[in-house]
Every structure is written in structure tokens, then in C-alpha cells.
Length: 127
Image (cartoon, rainbow, N blue to C red; front, side, top):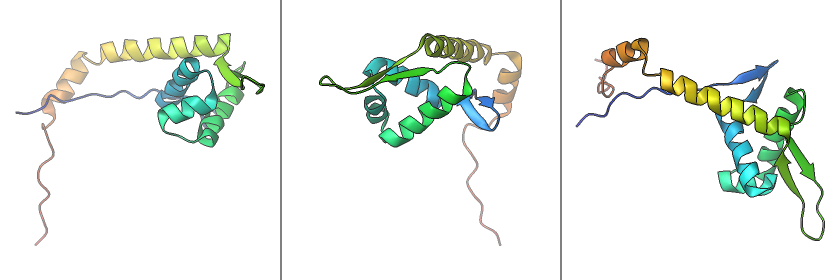
């Protein structure tokens, strides 16, 4: 049984040479919102705190307002949350993803998938 062709549209917004937001950073924002901290969000995504913090730092420097607000640790521990700007950016990004995914069934996408093999041909050795 052959599997239907799949189309994946990856949206990245750039700020100079830096990726201001893309699929992974949007997922990190979701995780921060869910987990309440950068370290817990990183753990939930299988990444180190340093990697998560570096991604947040890039995002915070790329937008007109920081997307993630942090508050220092105390007896109850520190944490992080999305700012109003962060919630807005994430909502707009997810809406754009949904819109483009819906349009992926357009005529051009259907034409491309009609020309696509279900799987690559076997590699043929030389000679």
C-alpha cells in the first residue's frame, strides 16, 4: 500500500540573519506557556536549558517587545511567561501556519503531488 504524498510548509520570519520565529521557536513558546519556565519547557522538548535560553534570547532581541518575560527565583522558584507581545506573535504565527496548511491543497500542490513517486527509486550502483 502506498502512502499519499505529503506537503510540509515551514514558515520562518527573519530579523537580519537571525530567525525571529519558526516552527521550533513557536513550539518553545507554547511549552513556556504550558510549563511556566524556560528550563521546564526545554526539558519537555528534549533540549538543554542553555539551548532554550539562547532561542528565547534571540526572539526577545528580534521583536519590538520581548516575547518572554522572566522572573527571578525565590522560595517558590523562578519562572517565565509569554508577554502580551509573545502571545500575539504566537497567535499570528499559528494562524498563518493554519492558513497556509489549508491552502496546501490548492491546484499547484495537487499537480506537484500527482507527479511525485510514492517512494524514491532504489539506488542503482555504477558499473
